[in-house]
Image 1: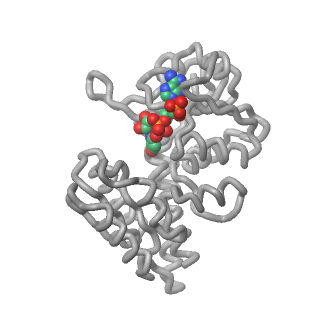
Image 2: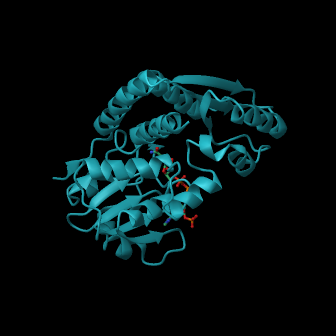
Length: 280
Ligand code: NAP
């Protein structure tokens, strides 16, 4: 029986710690707001945006909501970001992705001032993370590091195999695991012998975006398995990239979906906001 890594509980711990920190920063006169921008009305994005606003309210920081119509032009969005970059009170700017097709996401990400880039997606943030300099860390991978550490999983010297090399999960995950002294293998859709490689992992991190893809044949006895994927199955129930029922009996620890990695992303976003208020 694997230990269930409880992301809900750990994210709550982090938010409670941040709430205390926000109070003590207020006593020092340090406050600030997170600007959350949504373009269009994608229902999934609306849920994420609402959760982020609720998390701000919980830890005690102000959130400013910008709900823009789907027809908003790239120029208008870039104009708003420029305006927010110049506002001292705004310590973080978050643009909910994905954006409508007529807006270039890269341009938008690069328009955000790196000292307000609480998502950690700006090339300057990514570069700083790569060479171990201070800056905002990408929230989902940073959350996974917290999940592992706070569950007592030792990382140093372990072989970590990551499935996926996206800019928001796979690549930053690899860099953060390397920073924690793991030996890292990154795999992707062109990787040969995927299951054999995965079976060598002490820590297997799955971020491939394929519902219930990874079964028992990918997992070494006693491995720690982190499932980043989020999907709805044929019964409209949430599931991950991992076949949970099949993998759980082999793993020593595993994240469930929901209640594993998901809640950590918002907790780490809040962490970045508090860091920004502290430094601002
Ligand atoms: P993505 O951009 O679609 O990247 C998927 C990665 O998986 C790519 O690198 C792809 O390889 C690789 N891949 C796809 N099929 C593969 C296969 N058969 N064998 C090996 N590798 C394969 O996805 P993402 O943004 O990283 O997200 C991954 C999953 O995590 C999604 O389900 C997403 O919803 C979820 N997610 C969850 C959170 C959270 O807070 N819990 C946050 C972000 C994402 P190539 O590069 O070769 O195409």
